[in-house]
Image (spheres, rainbow, N blue to C red):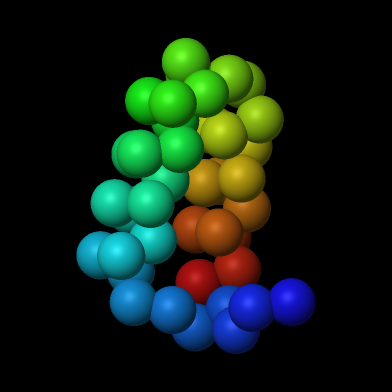
Length: 39
């Protein structure tokens, strides 16, 4: 797996891009919630 401690700004940009390309699939929100809980 990739390191958990990544640049938060890059993570948010990546998440936003994935969310936009995935047309706001519900699991994207779940992943963000999990990331925030870990950090």
